[in-house]
Length: 200
Image 1 (cartoon, rainbow, N blue to C red):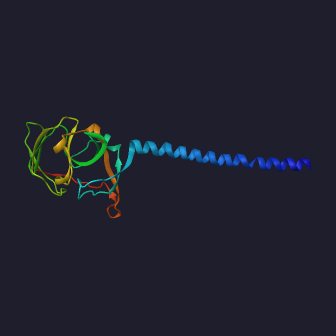
Image 2: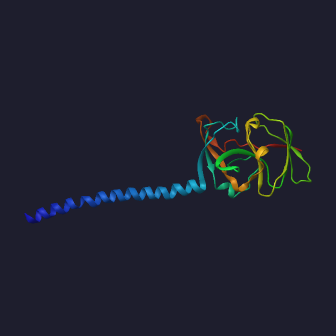
Image 3: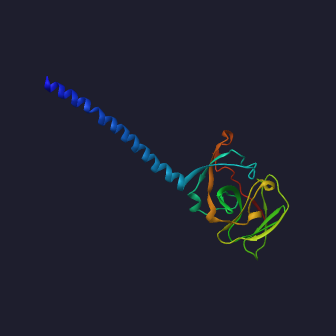
């Protein structure tokens, strides 16, 4: 009888370690998820919600994008690429614009015509930009350093961009949109992808 009681007590005592193991496994799973998710968001991809009309009609307020933070560091950004970056005058804010001028180029805006030259002494070639919503008359000419881009919104009449605050240093660039998830009708890969036509 005594032996039987001891066995029963041992059986009951064995339930507690099982419960502890269950909670330990949950903690392990949570830590593993954090180890995977946090670096992924910090270094590879991150969600971004568009705010404002500067990229209309390409992107509208509320559009939900996934930003590739890793790939743009491995390959050269090209004219026409869309980038998300820290606003140079207030790095806590993030902007989304399209690259128009590349490092080392000279960019000129004469009224509504945008032209680029591969050097200050080079011949200017006019860009045809089928993605823009509207334009404003501007007169801008700037030489881009080897680490600078000239960026503008597709909604030229309602965009704070390189025309007003100057070239964008590449150190401010956070990444490129690679997936659009919202609105559902616009789900796709490489959203807003378009390349300006060079009229030689």
